[in-house]
Length: 530
Image 1 (cartoon, rainbow, N blue to C red):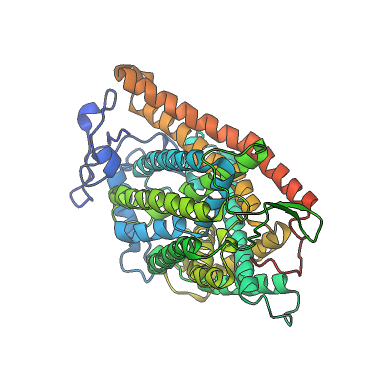
Image 2 (cartoon, rainbow, N blue to C red):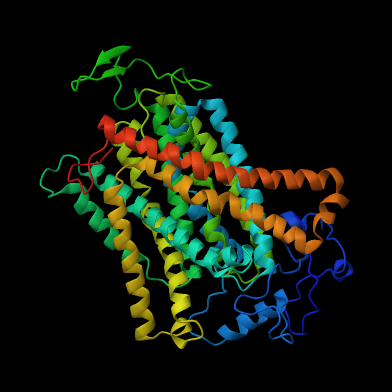
């Protein structure tokens, strides 16, 4: 990680970003711990492209330094009713916790049952490390270009300021966020079906419950700033933590997993062969594990960690962007501990035979309902968070330089509400068309995380290193420079693997699920409860 700033000294009232004018004419040099942990000594490197919307030759007298751009953003919001750059690093940590400490944790036991416990935990740590590193690359990029508001702006800047790059990124950005919203509509219906399993008076259960979930989420999406949402996000992360800890405890104290059968082998009433007996836990994948199954399990783990798509939006609303790594490290450490422990403990007491995704379905009915109920805040909030990110992406571009952006106006609020309603309607449709949990996670991971989790940030690394001094930068750092280059090439290739082979595995898994009859059809009225 290399951060420097070759921009002119900021004006007297600037935010005093640290600069490194001594390296302005040569290659950049590492700046120690601040490159990894942020803080006031963080050095900010040169831009890789002109300010968005401004050509390289226009406005030559305009100060393009990070400090100047931030000063202008604060000045533009001063005295306005709705201010966006208000988040401290603690509030940003709350947003990150709410994004990562989420329902997808309960897919880890299923992934470990497919991959085996040892490879599962190793992959958990490796993916966490990769996401931490690429998130720091993204943070460095945002410091150099504080005018970027979301990953779509970054896509345009990365790919040589081409407008097609912005549009391509925008399509993936909206689809990714809407898929996540759809996932939460789906699981919200799953929760309501689980809690009302004995009530036969509900008409078209799953569709009805999905509609209820989408209306509730839409209403909860209405707050306009992340500062307001961060408080809800912190509460959401707390209740999710309680939920998964209870699930791990209940898995250990229950007499048997849900669906337990003392027979080692038997035929179900539906005529299918099944394996019973005590839970089978393996350190490595069992014989017969297919490539599609293994890759789907790996994609499930990856999806839970990869969330860089929202980070530019979070940084764009921070009072002090240099402090972002504090929030990132706190969240990453918590992720590794919680994901590994919950995944391993629930798997150890549930085994391969009785595993479900999410793993709440492997608990006895009472335990399942108690632990699943603590997940309600995150079922609502995380979808709300992604809806808000999508809505502000559209809203800011409709009302750029307009009073409707920062003031309470009828037009502003009506537009904001309508945009949110549109995204939630699309999410409802997705939930009904792809009505299964683990495969939806895998499909999202392969299609979108390939770019937003890997490819973008490998490209960003090389673009920034070129701005810092080009190939000479790598040569002057000898082995370390070459190793970092190799790492970022590997990150790009990993993204390509996700996009190609990962998408194939996800689609094939969906086909297999439909063929086996394990899931219902689209817009199904049948219960999807655990």
